[in-house]
Length: 142
Image (cartoon, rainbow, N blue to C red):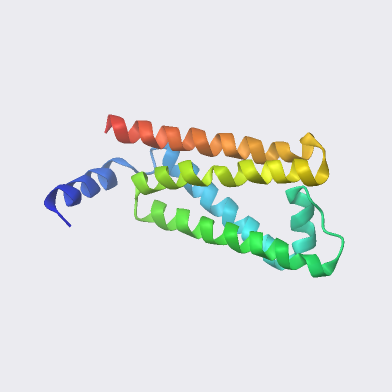
């Protein structure tokens, strides 16, 4: 690493801690995704109902578990970035990964046909984008 990069990382770590809203939002997302992933692996039928597309055959639980592993891996990644205070990485991850709940919402609409079941996904996408924007703004003002 260059001296400039090391200095930037030190500044980022120094300014981002438990007094920041985005710090707590990052941990909330991490814990929530880890819980969703764990729930999907343990009880895929209930997790599919909560997602908005209930499965009727136990053979379909494999697809729910794929989503559960995705949520678990994303939650652990967010937790790691928050733990080592990689705010810029979290910001970029949030911007890119906001497409996941948005597309989940589209999937629920196309499969279920009712917008009401997809609202949780669209609201999540908006909250993730707002968090990404707040992380960007904090970084810009630092």
